Structure formats: C-alpha cells, structure tokens
Image (tube, rainbow, N blue to C red; front, side, top):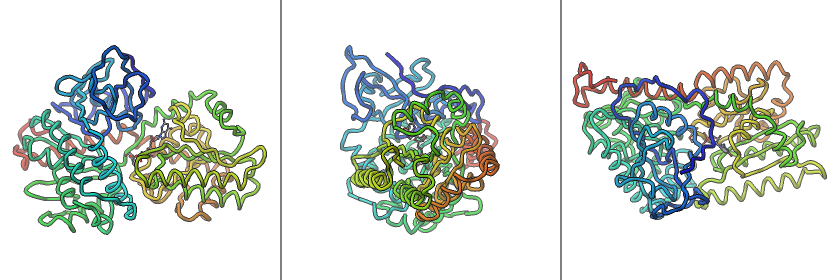
Length: 528
Ligand code: GDG
C-alpha cells in the first residue's frame, strides 16, 4: 500500500503528548469527512464508494486537506480512540474489516477509523439535500436559496442515525464523543438515547448559527434543536452565534430553560453548556512553509503570465455563494476605475475551489463568477496585462503559502462566514510582516482580527475599492504595525489553542454535569 500525504507534518499541532483529555479512556470523533481516504490507484476522490474487493489493484491513501482533520489526527494518535466518518474513497470498503474499521495512520496504526457507507441516494438526500440546500443557506442567512424536499429530512434523519449507531457500538460510560458540524445535528440526541447515561457528548458547529427569524424557516427545526440539546457541550466560533442559538431555543423549544448569562440550557433533566471558542490554524506550519517557499511564486507567475513585481491582491475560497466573490470582483472593478495609476501594475489573483457542484445554486454561482472575471478582464486588459488571474486548479500547500507570503493584500469578503480560516492562514504566512488583510465585518474571525485588519462591508463596492487602494498605498509603518497585531492574535489563537480550549471545556462540563449523568461529583471516574 502506498501513502500520499500532501501536508507537512511539522507545526504546533503535531507531536503533542499533553492535552486536557489525557486520561479519557475512549475518545470518539464523529464527522462527515474522514481523515484518511483509500483509493484504487488512478481513481478520483469525488467518485462515490463502490462495493469491491481490492484484488491486485494498488491502493493509495491520502489525507483530505482540512484544518480540522490535520489538527485532530495527532490528538487521536496520542489518546487512541475511534474516528467515525463517511467512507468516500472507492477503495475504502475493500480495506476495512468486518466491522467497517481500519487502523490508522497507515504507517503507525494508533487509532480506529470506523467508516459509514452512504449510497448515492443517501448522499443526495442527507448531504446535497438537507445539509447543503437547507442548513447551509439557512445558517448563512440565504433564506431564498433554501430548497426543501421531504425526503431530504428523511435521509438526514436516517444518516444521522447511522452515524449514531456506529458511535454507540464504540461508547462506554467513560467515553467522550465529539461531533463535528451541521451534517450531524440529530446525532447527539440519538446517541444520548442509546448510550450509557454517563457518556459525555460534545459538538462543534463550524458555521454561523442563524437568527430566530431565519431559523424559523427550517423544516424540522424543533427536532434539530432538541437533537443538539443531547450534547453536554455545544461549541461555536463566536459569541453572536451562541446568543442566536440560545434565542432559538427560547423561542422554539417549549420546556427548555435558558440561562443566557451562563450559556446553559436545561432540558429534560439535563444541561447543555454553550460556549464560543474561535477555531485557529496551524500557524507555525504556514509560517514555516512560507519561509521555505523558494521559486514557487516565480513559477506561479510564469504559469499565469503575471509580472512578478506587480502589486498583488489575493482571494482564496471555496466557490460558494457565501464567500462574496462577486462582491469582491465588483470592488476590484471599482478600484480599477478609480485608480488608473495601477493599470498594468496590479494583479488580482483569485483561487476558487469548485464545491458542491451538483447543487444548481453552486453551478449558477460558478458560471456567474467566471463570466464576471471575463467581463472585467475584457474591459481593462491591454496587450500585455490582464487585471484578474482566475484559477480553479488545486494549489499545493507550498504554492498556497508562497502566494500568501507574496500577496500585498488579501481580500477576505464573505457575506457571512462561520470563522474563515483563509484570513488566519494569510497572516501566519505573512512572514515578511508587511501584508495587509482586508476583512469583511461579516466573517466570524472579524471578532479576533478586526482591530488590525482593514474592515470592509463587502456589499459596498465603493468603500471596498477605496480600502484596496488605502491598503496598497499605506506606509510601511502602518502595514507592519497592523500585521504585527494580526500575527500576535493568530499565533496566540492557533489550532493547538483551539483544541486545548475545546478539550478544556469538555473536561469542565464533564465535571459539572457528572451528577446529572449519574455520577457523584466526587467519583474520580467522573472526571478526566
Ligand atoms: C467551514 C466554515 C470555518 C482552499 N483552496 C485551496 C485550499 N483551500 C483551503 C484553505 C482553507 C480551507 O480550504 C477553507 O476554509 P474556510 O474556513 O475559509 O472555509 P470553509 O471551507 O467554508 O469552512 C468556515 C471552517 O469551516 C472551520 O470551522 O472557518 O467559516 O464555512 O484552509 O486553505 N488549500 C489548498 N489548496 C487550495 O487550492 N492547499
């Protein structure tokens, strides 16, 4: 078996041996995406899983690039335990045992990956349907984008049940179950019904939580809220989402008692603690890769026909309507209108990663973005210059870090975003200390980084354009002062900090809720 691993093993998240969960007998992580995917050589990662024996075909293992899986993997390697996730690789089934399990990491098996299988139909209803055409638009307050069919909710229930059943197979009263994200809103409640009552269940919600005004459009909304109250701990990135969640509970869950000051919901004899802990990135790894980037920028310029000395603005996003790419293009267009001195001397590089392309709203969005890029380039390009370089090609971490380092300004302009890790990655990779971050007031990370960023309202193209110019022409002292402040915050609140904060909260809640979970507070087995 061959291993391909695109990411660096260095950085603050790796090689840790101390964390607040030391002593937990069994940690069970549950997420939609898996930390390792097995593929028959030459297959594409997007193909659905098929039932097949490995035969003589060569199997490769890759680690889908994602901050969360990269951060949690070393924790599970240290603590042991089980990770439950959808097996989306075409060789995933062929390599697992009779319980759908496989030991990982492949080179040094130290925890169990338990895979959940989804048919095309299940995926359509649970993932493309309820998760991404109901919950995603609702959480990002794009209520008009909501598309609902009853079978979406039925599949969501069914698949959440499969994840819960898989978790219950592995839990004991000593277990801590840690669920990830909006794909699994019903899972905690389902585990709670079947697991020993001492089991600790926590969940982190990576996207915003909507206001009651938006959430009232959610089909099955009360069932979802009750499901989430199966958790002992529910984490969000920022306080505003905690507040909105508690408001929804007050408004839509009869019988639930909310203590807004303490962030506690009492429901059916149990407590759910609601906390905000902003997620960080492996800042040391981005810093290191940016310092090591050698020749990557020159190669990128060569490939895309960029004058290496131009003023560079950069955007990096999934091609998602919540990320504000059309609004950013409008800001760049106004900037080109108002600052002719930059013509020929400025390039806006936009990396957009196609995402959820099976969903019509995403396909339409992609087409619109591409046509806008073409229109603006047609309007301003000259024989030897085009203002926008747009690519959907996957960028290796090294190239991405080199682009971050070189960009004079990073344009992060979501219309609404749970946190936004790209902003932090840019700051961590700005090792020369003179980059400038333009940041939407509507990104969760604005709470942490807003003081030192150039804040923008992404829908106001005139202000956007003026702020691009301001950032590009700011004196060196101002840029360095701002970036120093940003780097301090990003390194202080990195991925390791977030993981420790999460596990610290889980530990705290485990202690305070021990009596309601059937243990006396003095029982040593009730704490970690
Ligand atoms: C959700 C929430 C929250 C993109 N293109 C390439 C590439 N990427 C990586 C970036 C970054 C990640 O994708 C995108 O992360 P974001 O945080 O910006 O956004 P979502 O995917 O929407 O994530 C978000 C997050 O969950 C965590 O809780 O912050 O608010 O929506 O890491 O670097 N990476 C590489 N090549 C690419 O071409 N290597």
